[in-house]
Image 1: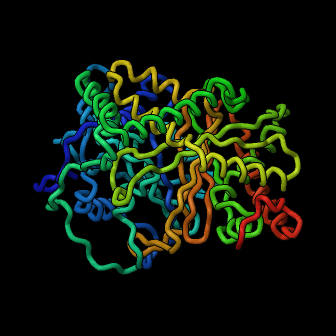
Image 2: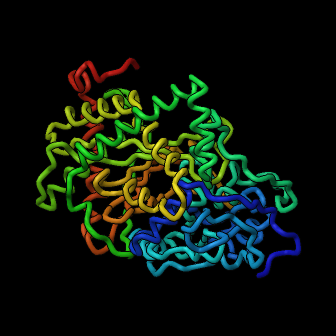
Image 3: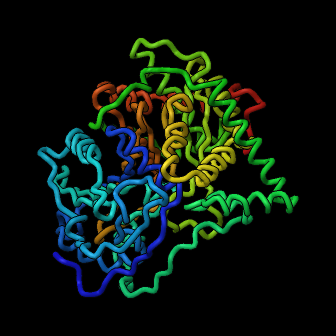
Length: 492
């Protein structure tokens, strides 16, 4: 199926240094796959069964103009040299290359689904084409079906809410027709509005010596910019101390990994997590981190592994998008490095420590430090940028990644069928054997566990431990008259 005569509206713009870093991670280690993904599971169509792949393509293609980079490829398959690759129109674009059909082996239960997802997400995207794939997966038990995506991290950051599947989802079973987006006037994304010329120069895709000099001159002549420099310098110092003096402990979570993956899922009720937050204090993200802490404690114990006295350290991505950037492509994220006190035996004290740690980090400047490091890396020539990337994603800095993305609170539909659950994927980096992605949707919370197949044969232990940790905290919330300590409780 070749595209129609109308060309998709496309932008031509250069990758940022952060976007390019996800390409470089793959180039440095063959075992790292830097794509994110979703498996969206649907009930049967009103007329029964699943849509045809031709129907999916026909509905998606005219809407692709709303996300023009999904019709663009990289100008060069690798980074390096004197400039970053650009997004350029793919003259050979054929939607059939990106949207295909697959059938789950019988009986189409969770075991078959998770095995299929693990295999699908174990393979890299072809860099000679636009960096995304969508599979219509049929054969799920009860005539259910799924839309499964694989999108490179250099294209979207997973926290912006932008993905090709959004173009197929509707708020009602019978939505009004959408306009054909292929004729839309698309202008290149301007990117984040810079707070200053100096900050803009720090985030420039190609930073020549002259631009660096201009940025330095601005800082010398503008006190407000000098204050910004001081703030960022302190933030970077805080991050450096954490990295060099208080490095993440070595555990079995941080070993050389291969290219094959295992995937597992744990489920929770959003109202239950909200009740925990209401009774024990903190935020929903704190509840997720506390659940992960308890589950990882059990996981390490089941492996017969000593619990690190200082705890594990999780990299928790945080969005730094400004108002009006919610739908922009590319990456606008920073990171918090949160301690997970797995060595604390008492669940109430463990929860209290997680909340206190998260509150201290949010009040501090660590996220700004991470963002400043990334922006400063934009001043480094692309040929040398890979060295900074290797440091930024080292197991010395963190043990695993935990993402938490709030999804739509109400049921969404595709082709009139309700979407029942969303299973999320976060990539794992070199020497990081496990990643945890969490998404809420329509009253449910889904923990997607991505792991190295060779070193994490016991991933089911972690998924079961997550569900047990939720139950433990729900029980604790019922006795909240005494727990946690008053210093952690917040007004209702």
